[in-house]
Amino acid sequence: MARFWSIKAVRTILTLWFVVTFAFVVLRLSGDPVQALLGPDATNDEIAHFTELWGLDRPLPEQYLAYAGRIAVGDFGVSYRDGREAVDLIGERVPWTLLLGITSYVLAILVGVPAGIIAALNRGRLIDRLIMSLAVFGFALPYFFSGILLILLFSLTLRWLPSSGTGGIEHLIMPALTLGLFHAGALARFTRSAMLDVLSKLYMRAAAAKGVPPARRILRHALPNAAIPVVTILGLNLGQLVAGAIIVEVVFAWPGVGRLLVTAVTSRDLAVVQALVLLIAATMIVANLVVDLLYGVLDPRIRAAR
Image (cartoon, rainbow, N blue to C red; front, side):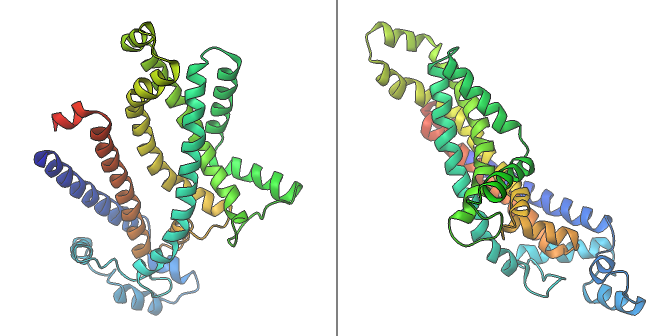
């Protein structure tokens, strides 16, 4: 077990280092952030002053070593745009993204997993085809398109919900539906496939031959064995929720980290972009670690192998 977690820790550190390095190099090779921030009317003296002030006149390796040293002690730099600590800016937006992400995630599980189970238990019947058709429809629609459709229906036509901003729970419904239903569709398809695979196993037929009631066969034998592949897709969905939130937050003017990332990239606010890229990468790594932990909980053979 100690060797397993040591390998995981080393792999996590190397992945984060690669992400930090990649973001650092790409952002500096993609243009001059000083000109992007100051605009076309900036004088040469102003550009030279801020280039020196932010250390962008130094050689790239020197900038990288200074940046890596600051990251190692938890200093993510200051926003070029408004002069505040990048961590403070991100900290103000994280609760909004967490609210949207957790609500969407719970919605995806509550809709996707039961729908996949019901479809598998009714394989080939009308309800199976109906659920899978809705799942494909929900999964096929891009975030921005389904979000705009919801705004057209519930805001402009029916006038039931606000189209953007924050306030009460009514502001959360459409962004959460846009994210949650997309992942519910993928989850339903994956759950159905996992359940069908388990239902075809010999031990399920043996349990039926012994007269084990259907409900007990499903709850005691089918669901635990189908849970491992479903947990895998749940971990991937968690990472995709963070990426999808970027688009959804822009569509619905939701004040989360996704919208902050778009603003920071547009204005080439390097410190904020780098910190957000690191945060998103860390979120996906943590999601994978949680999935690994759940593997051991769900299957004792995996726990013993470690």
